[in-house]
Length: 90
Image (cartoon, rainbow, N blue to C red; front, side):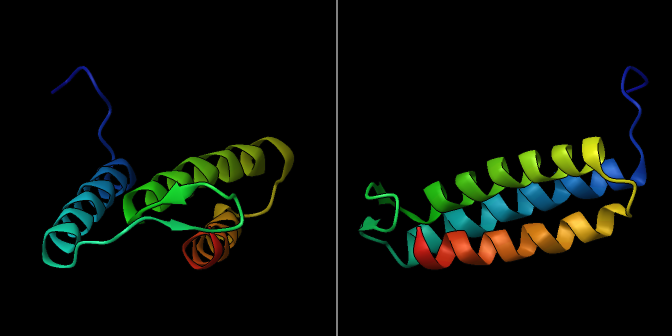
């Protein structure tokens, strides 16, 4: 795998995404969920909310890199708050 620069943070990122997908798959099998309507007025499941969270977090981190010189850890905190809001109200 010399074609890609695998650093520890990159590996941790992809491992975390893989673990999240595994956990959400197991949750869907063990505890089936009916879609619910939130503030977006569309029906969403846990998987939909995870996707919305990951997509929004990518935009938050990209914007943070483009517009701020502060440490990236602050963006991670904002992403955690965003994730909590998505899973609560969307």
